[in-house]
Length: 253
Picture 1 (cartoon, helix red, strand yellow):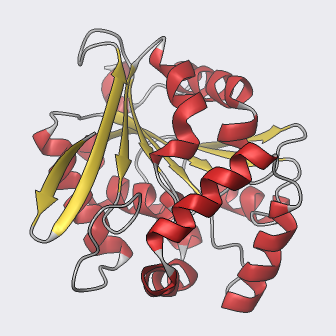
Picture 2 (spheres, helix red, strand yellow; picture 1 turned 90 degrees about the horizontal axis):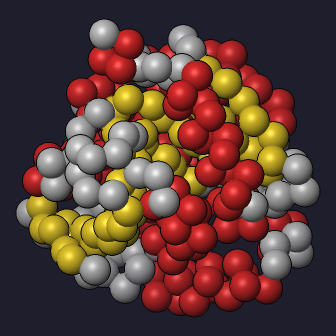
C-alpha cells in the first residue's frame, strides 16, 4: 500500500488490474465506516481481471493515522478528489459501500469530471436507521447473517479504527442526506442491495433509484449488507453490465 497525504489527512492506496488507460473502465473502491479495503479484496480481484481497480483507505481507517479534526462528508470527498487527481484517475466508476456510498456520491457531485458512474452497495443511512441505537440494532442483525470471514475482517478493522474515531465519523454518516445528494448526480447511478441486508432496506434503495436522474437497482440474492464480500461474482457482473448498458456522456460522445 502506498500513502497520499492531503494536509494532515493520510489516505492509503491499493491498486491492481490493468494499467491506467489500457482497459476501460477505471474503478475506484471506497470502504464504509470503521473498515478498510480488506473487505473489498474478493471484488477487487474479480474486477481487476477486466479493468484498472484502485481501492482507497480513508484517514483514520485501516490503521492509518487519525487526523486532529473530524472532516465532514464534503471535506473528505474534496480531499479524496485531490488524491485521485494525483493518481491520474479520472472519469472512473466510483464504488462506495455503506458509508462509502456517501463519500463517492459527494465526490461525484463536487467533481463530476472524476466520475463516469456511481455505484452504491448497501447505501446508508436508511431513513429507518438515523440514530446510533437504530444503526446498532441493524448492525447486530447483519452480523448474524454475515459469514465468519466477513465478520472477522470487520471486527479487526473496527478495533484498528477505535470507538472515538468511529463515533466522530458516525455523526456525519447519520446526518448526511444521501437521498438529496443523488438528485444532483450528472452520471448514471447503480444501487446494489443484498436481499438480506437489514441496514439498507428495499424501500430506501428504491427511493434512491427513483430520485436520481438516471439510475438502476439490483438485488443480490441471499447476500447481507457486505454483498461485495459474500457475492463478488454477482456484484462484479451487475456492475460491469450496468456500466456497459448506461454510457456516461463522455463515453457516448
